Image 1 (cartoon, rainbow, N blue to C red):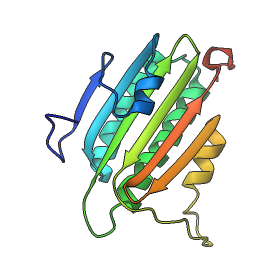
Image 2 (tube, rainbow, N blue to C red; image 1 turned 120 degrees about the vertical axis):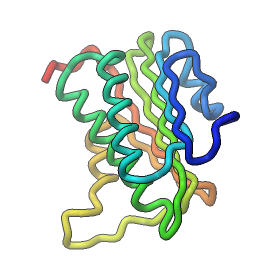
Image 3 (cartoon, one colour; image 1 turned 180 degrees about the vertical axis):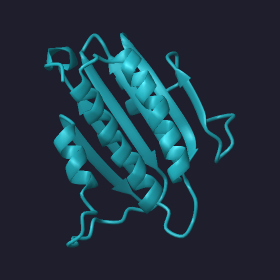
Image 4 (cartoon, one colour; image 1 turned 90 degrees about the vertical axis):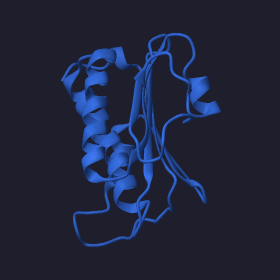
Length: 165
């Protein structure tokens, strides 16, 4: 993001310049947006970003408690994975972009890091279930990996037709 130094958190709501062409398409008419770009990928910053996103979500999406918690948990998993796995032995950044499109009654969230992908390794522990959890909680969960980082796209449809928690 122009004008924001790496390692510096920046956020705005509505009237945003989307981070990519895909985000620009998702930000069509009737979309309210949340963006936190250039966040240090560490546990403390991820917690603050999640809290800010939770406040935005409460203001822009239906008040169904179950849906609210499902979205927060899925987004937290994506943020935590970036903080924990994308930059082994070094520091990096993570971006969060969300759009609530009232015309299409949909919520889309993108979490992006610029580190390296580490495939999940099966273990007997309780760890390593973040991707499964994201896929179970979102209507759509897509993970794209490349040499430029990882992009996680989470989508929920028919927000107002869901039963309240």
